[in-house]
Length: 127
Image 1: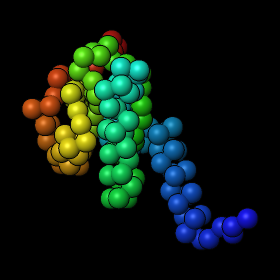
Image 2: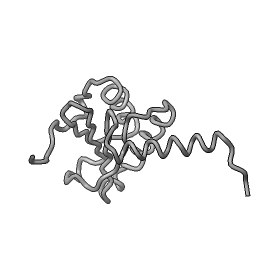
Image 3: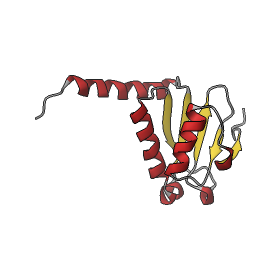
Image 4: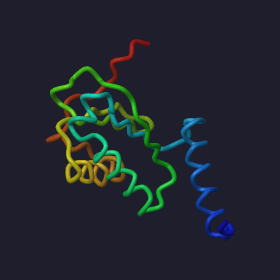
């Protein structure tokens, strides 16, 4: 059995920290990847993988990645919803890895909505 190294413990600690941010809702931004059957068939796993790589590579700790079921627009999958604290949520559609990376850089990190990929802004929640 391999021994645990200090850097392994650091990685575990960071993973737990990100999990706690998700539970406590303290992230600066939240990205929801819609991963119902239709989304998975359309490529949402590649979208999620691209986002996970960006978060890991840049060591970003204030962006929460989560998954949800179908958003009801199967023909527009893969889809993500980007929620930045204090701003209206934006739903992006017809995504691939390149579009997702652009949205991450410009909207999530830069604060500017990528209108060419956005379907709508706002929330379907009634409150």
